[in-house]
Image (cartoon, rainbow, N blue to C red):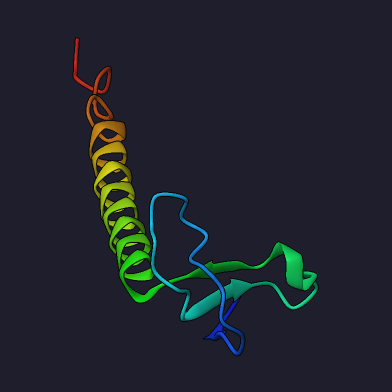
Length: 79
């Protein structure tokens, strides 16, 4: 994925936003019509959401590792 400044004046792709786009996010093999153009505020909001998702996934993975170890020693006791 790539992020660059928009070179043409265009509206932000967030339908509820009335600002002009300042940035576009795209893959190198994407046609210009498939690029996501966002204003600074919407780009910041997407960044915040991505960071929250990453943090939540790390917490979930940590919890999964901890719960996998519960009961690992069951059945190893003497009779």
